[in-house]
Length: 299
Ligand SMILES: [Zn+2]
Image 1 (cartoon, rainbow, N blue to C red):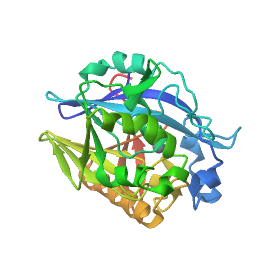
Image 2: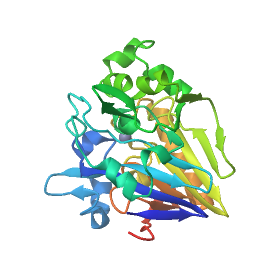
Image 3: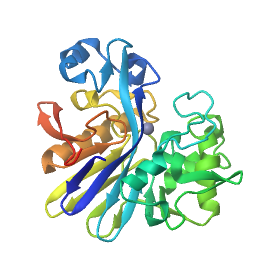
Image 4: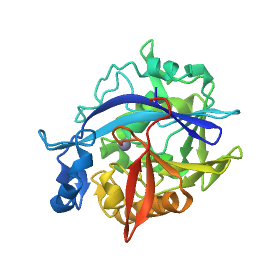
């Protein structure tokens, strides 16, 4: 298990999968430029790019955050047995993610807060699991925090556009709605504190209701940034959006703001899709930024 410390808080990666991005680099990253890419080849191979396949490599994982008070799960991967036609990487998976969560030190009933940065299918999957043919919340004692904006936009019953969006429609029905119907969802607006050391903030762009979590304990800081940034190359090219960003201008502005915060406050960056070693320290470099990967303390 790979665990990092932020003050007295531990943050452990619970991995679902590492593999090739579904699209070639030019489509996965909008604005992609082969010259800039070539300059970084030395560190991109083998954990972040496969020259043989010409595909970027991405991870899908959750972060387990343990404080003295709370056991929090940030983002819930794609989940098992979910029907995701058109998304081969997420369709009808059967991974030992729950065993990995236990290995990381938490049983499902130990989780008291689940936080989804947004409601795309690769972030909500383990919100629920199949039991006797029904989707039920995986974490029976958890409050699930969703952004109200994200929920309103993602609910195909209220927003017909969400129905046509394959990233959202099925996953809302099998991974979000059952949580709301079980009375375990809490919709949040604006900034939101969790204890003294954690702050949820709006970070729109990748989706309109996207949120991030900032940690600050004993002078050490981190940002769990969801999909505000997808691939480590975007540290060097923060103007490149992912092909899945819904609001392009806001996504660029949010990415730059997150990276500036990390550089200025020496906050570690914990994204959801970076390949190994998954966590990075950020420094300002002229008009953009540079990155140094930070290994887990035990992994
Ligand atoms: Zn994602």
